[in-house]
Image 1 (cartoon, protein in one colour):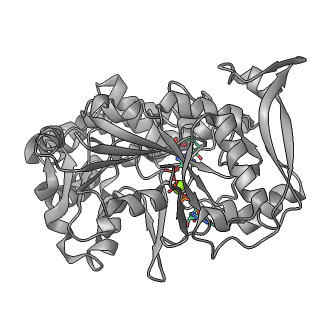
Image 2 (spheres, helix red, strand yellow):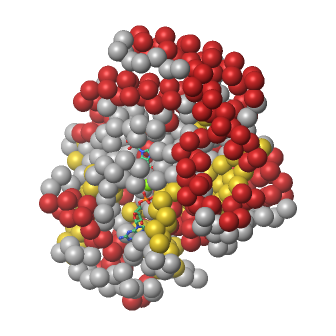
Length: 429
Ligand code: GDP
Ligand code: IMO
Ligand code: MG
């Protein structure tokens, strides 16, 4: 069963979108299986830049099928806005898009609850994207007040469901914030009914569809959102997202068993970034960090927030790679480090005087970790026009070797610019 998956191994924004776009050429179906419109994936080719959030990046290739499975949480308004932006580019999209009836729906109350909860944490705020993602997943786990795509497209019973849930949510929101405006069930029902009408033709049982597709030998590509260190169970809790964003989420989110995946590509930046709160041992809160931010244009695709930047962390990334079970690495944005005289990689942590290469499970331990940094000479060259590994400066090749050695997996792809063409495929044969 020839399935491939693309997983971020850091804290998100590793340039998964670019890799998915590249691989789409050799696949028939691209699948999003967790997260929601907290994701922002960028694809660049033919002089155009495309930003995708809920739609799989395969949507940009005519003829490729896009599937959004049950593990994704869907804001129908955001979904339709994105689709409307794409349909003009890819006229056949309507025939090639499927949405799971099991996927949970994001409603205005999810954003309202998240705003109150984040505000309540003050300086400890998670720094979420405010898209109602965590609150929607919370309702999914809670079961009593959740609504799925299958319910949304079911007419009258949907009206009753919205009334019940809004009654409950208004009581909760009033208790949390007495100044909050009550939600209007009828207005939400009528808005979402319109979305339902437009989305209904796409809604189906995607699990059974994917099982049949794999049995027929169709090539499936799984597009991860966020990164392994933001995984709800295995990441830097509570500064994580609310889904399994490591490889662990593929099976639960799509219904396709892990064993169907033949090749798992772990995507990493040549350095590290993080958006939102939480410990970040290799963070550079200085002019080098600002230099990386400027060179890499490190501002969030979704929220526009400046991304925190730091050196490549082989402890954290190695953990992400083992967690997700990758076969190889795609090292992205290598060009961004091109002006630095010296580059550094974190090869271990020191916690209370003890050296370790284990990634701590406890946030307080990670917060106390001092990175043990290996320094290397920079290559001080523009890499953006290079297309072959042997044409990279020796310092850049050494850097890639150190990354591969410390993380423990070979580098199969190197990216030296945002465009589809600015890619080096490593021949390991
Ligand atoms: P994703 O969420 O993992 O898909 O990543 P994002 O799209 O949020 O962030 C990656 C950013 O890096 C995007 O703006 C890409 O266009 C850009 N990008 C991708 N690969 C490269 C590269 O090799 N070099 C540079 N300079 N930019 C890149
Ligand atoms: P892509 O797919 C980077 C971060 C948020 C916040 C935390 C929780 O583009 O890599 P949430 O809204 O999910 O409850 O926020 O997770 N976060 C991301 N950071 N890339 C992403 O997605 C992210 N999606 C969520 O900044 O710290
Ligand atoms: Mg992103």
